[in-house]
Length: 186
Ligand code: IMP
Ligand code: MG
Image (cartoon, protein in one colour):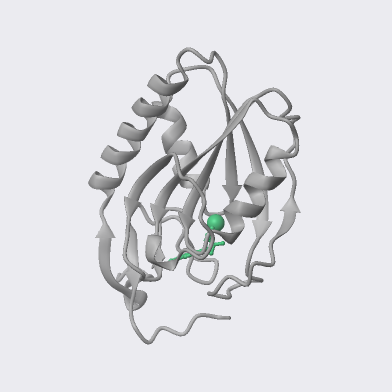
């Protein structure tokens, strides 16, 4: 049986081997950087960050908490950020005095992360850093500092490894480029 994603896939951009190797490197780097801090809270941005979070945390060898934040940047399915970001589901834990590391799937315009970083900074944490699996630097309209980047990619719409195509295919173990002409539900 042909896998259901095949009609939408132009090419595999980052295969499972490269993804897993880079996630392990990031985990090791984070472990080194936070060794003296003693504690860490990973804040996963739902839904796209979830696969990255669960792989990354296996490579972070210091005690840490996790929490989840769901934000909606675009309205469902839309492709271009308007800058209108809303909280869909807030954190369940207090973050005051904690060292926070945001775990995100992809940074595009930067609007979503600017909103999240400002919101968290207002809650009086000890520090806030940002880790993204993918970065599309050519699309940035707001300058935000990124502390850890898995891969910088060109301006192509991608899916898999947490990222969706109309809410589907988040489970793919690789990051793929959407075929030109595929109409997204937006
Ligand atoms: P920003 O606010 O423009 O930086 O948007 C970031 C969000 O847009 C990410 O968290 C993703 O949910 C979504 N996004 C941006 N580019 C892509 C893509 O190529 N594939 C899937 N989702 C994307
Ligand atoms: Mg996202």
